Image (cartoon, rainbow, N blue to C red; front, side, top):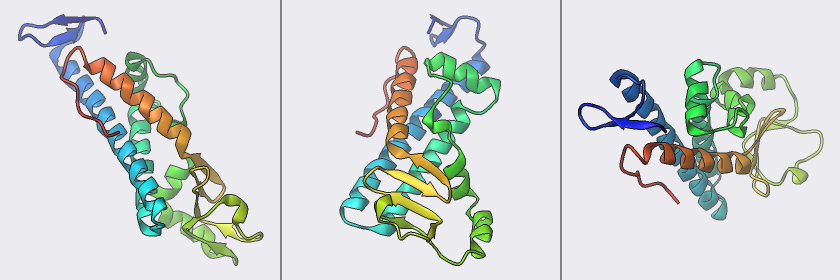
Length: 188
């Protein structure tokens, strides 16, 4: 960042007005928060899988997907502010976080269940390797714990590449704020 001090001592990018600075810093701080939430959800997911707690597993998957969705909305929607923020953080235009199929299915479960209702052989909320699924059955929601892939109908979302992207986004947000604000503690 090309920073200078303003009249009250806050370092700001040349050409910014105070209002845009607050909005920009708030967006980056929210990116940090959502990366924290995603990393915490993934840690919780691993712990839930270790003790075979299916409810906690799905709670954690949903928590990760919500945080990833919020990051996608902050960084990868079609609005110019997202492009500007990605540029400021040095992020690529393509990202696994931007994938919306599984996320949208979780958010609009009420609509998706209507489509599944007419099918004769289906199951929901399975946690097992994909290779172990019973042939002929369709799955509404499925987590493959060997690959950390979430499946909703025909859509797939690979959690591990998304988690790696979350970590890269967090590092970029930290680097952007380091010259301005004290570093926030992040989950492991």
